Length: 243
Image (cartoon, rainbow, N blue to C red; front, top):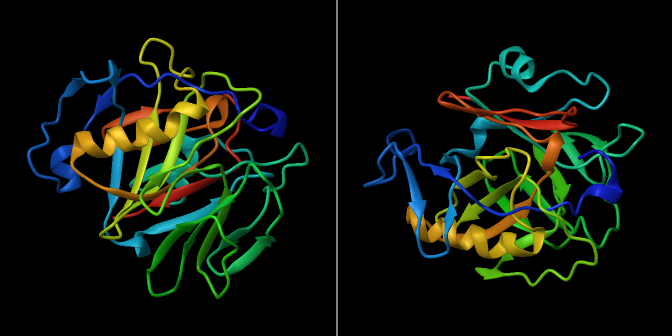
């Protein structure tokens, strides 16, 4: 979703393929399964124990397809980053390998920050980060903070595929995509996403300390060695997860 006015196009969560053996999580079969308590299905999840394996790159001017970016950057997995403007510029703070591409912007919707420092310490928070970071991304809204889901009050909310990044209590970084298997660009309402993320945590046995909404809908991509959903319009930036 490139245009700012479209960022609240939302979604209904259906479908979770859990990559249990790859994630190192106990008792998770590599099969698709229903999440019966809510009628939702879950979708693919990437768990990263070592934040030094995560890199953030821009694709604002190049507009290359995600599949090519995956190969070009030698990524094991790829997840789209945050939002961008009609002028192909990141919205708010964007730091790649210690270089500032864009500074923080005051914005009520893009109210969260993911930061990773040189020592591999990751943080997701709603307050303005300070310090030297290898990776920093402003996006939003914040979905979970201090183990509590946020109440999102939205004037215009629609269903769309959603991509999130989260942080667990034991400092693992989680990427997940929520979408409708029967209509891959459809998914939960944004207002329902905090609850969906917490439910996902319950299902796979992790506890989210914080979570942040990334770009979604047609400008989202989520590629692992065993799973792939790609974009219909260019992704502005991407997380490259290496082995």
